[in-house]
Length: 387
Image (cartoon, rainbow, N blue to C red; front, side):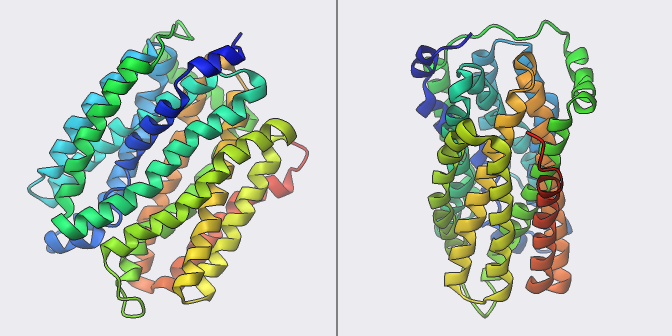
């Protein structure tokens, strides 16, 4: 049984920072998409770079995150960070759009190390503080998602898109060193062979209705999230705004204010239930699309981003709180199912966003994003009696 002493001993800040460093790599390419497509103007593959990265991340969740239930976690986490550094070198040096797409897939695969850290933190937390601990670690992860766009936007504008990937290399190596130094050793939670662990994912999906519902909600909501951020840089380049990649990255700073929602959502989930927090978060995300679609101004965009990121973050913390309570011996595998579904939803959102925006424009894109946000709310409002 974990105790409060366990939580104090765990380097929560370092774990949060490492999550942010890892997950940031998935989003470096979004503010740079205009620069990348200009560099590889004759390749249709260039526009699919964000989708390749998110698909790689989903693949990493499926194939690598279950290893956390089977192996010593500190060694696994350090190794993945080292591999991540190598994949970033490949992305930075990619000579063609297909090579960059492949490197981006591998970057996404290795970046799944973030989801080794989150269930590790949850396993060290007592039940009464699990939501708060998850919220704190997730605030780091979410800061990485948002600040990565700001960093890559400025770096891309000043030094080109390759420089953003080069910056990720020392960050990944530093995270590997800190995790090796600060993380406690762990014993595997399950004594299963790898292929049995993978096979158990389907059993968990079939036997855990809460897991299915949480995954469905988060997949739809993250799809909506990806719709917006995938094409924001392209939208801001339109004559109505006339802004470049640095401005697109700067909008990430707006979302940082919403990071406060993660630890608050965790504490509220501990006291009043995670499902209520998820309901509130999905509703905020749906409302944000009214700001994006109905008002053409930077102030409306800023207000919408604040509501959107706060809603998505609160829902994510609440749903992870729900699934980690289902089976302490299978937290990594539960997280695998949940996060794989979430990032498949994100990849679908990114792919749909690129196609819809290029063929139909911003207004139809907003309808698509709002529809996904609406879908995420349906289980929460239709089945209020569940946990």
